[in-house]
Amino acid sequence: MNKTNKIEDEIKLLKEQDYGVLDAQHSFMVDGVLGGFKAAIHKLHYTFVKQILLGIMSGVIIGFGYVACIIAMVSISGTDFEKFGTILLGFIFPGCIIMITFLGGGLFTSHVFSTIPVFKGCGSRRLYLKGIFGVLLGNFAGTFIFVALFSAAGGLWDNGPFLDKVFSMAMHKMYLVNHDLNASGTTNILSVLGTIGIGIASGILCNMMVCATLPLASTTKNTAAVILLMIFPIAYFAIGGFQHGPANSFFMWMLLFESIFNHSTVVSGNLHPEIQYFLLFIVLSTLPTLIGNWIGGALLLPGILYLINKEYATVLFKKIKLEYLENKVYSFKQKAETQAANLKNKIKEKEADIKAQEKQSKDK
Image (cartoon, rainbow, N blue to C red):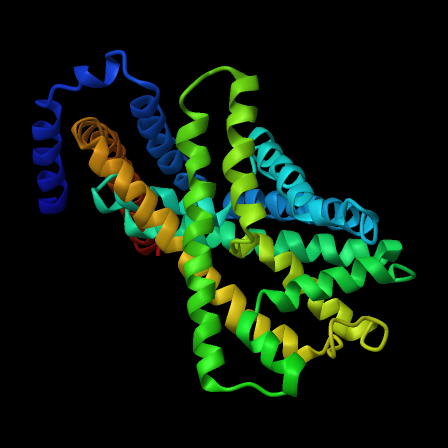
């Protein structure tokens, strides 16, 4: 009860706040930032299973997107347009994020935008961890499902240029270590640390752009404008070659499948797909990239936006916190009432048993 009373006291204080500033007309920037934070917090309230399912949907869409991008790049290889391959990638891949947005998928990289609101009391740490790790698990499962089905559909057979390109792009994401392996077949600790550092920095830059889609999409209710606004930040990170952890899991799983089924036929430089490269990819690319994605999307971009719009964001966080605490108190009371009802039923059952036993004793 002490905990409930403390929360109720905090609710009283929050109810005394003036939230009128949130209803006023704002600039695109303010509307976008406030809407982005609200959208990020809203996503955390899905159940763990739903987080996984949303992540799976996004992972599958990413798989489709990368296959389309790489086939398009391979199709112009050896032509006068080959140098436009990266630009082509940059303007095909945003379709993935647009589809995910309108179909309702979820990405680890956008979920982490909720970090600052959670630190401000708009949700519990448990809710936050459940949300970001649930959707991340789904993202990885989704790309795995896609790669498995793609392989079953014949994607690993008689598809040499495509598979070579996938392997080359996957190995490139290991930067200095990839260079060492191609040059001498071995690497060293400096290259390993350098590769990890590059992955973290690249992940930071990537997710600054990916998370920018949340506030951008909240600046307007015009669907066409939202689609247009999403294209540019995604194109920028894709063309720049910055690393997106959930998206890179497509290459991670392709590396695994190629090492199993296409070891001798696929090549990048002096290398062929091997299980050890799959494991190296996890350690040197996936994990550092996810760390960088978290820093860029949880702290750096939202931190800057929060400080710029602190006057409004602080009020918004108090309002969201008020709603969260009210729901929490309601949940506590519901739980207490349920427990009381169960206890009452048990007491009645016990009394009935005692009366039945007393009656049996009298009858004897």
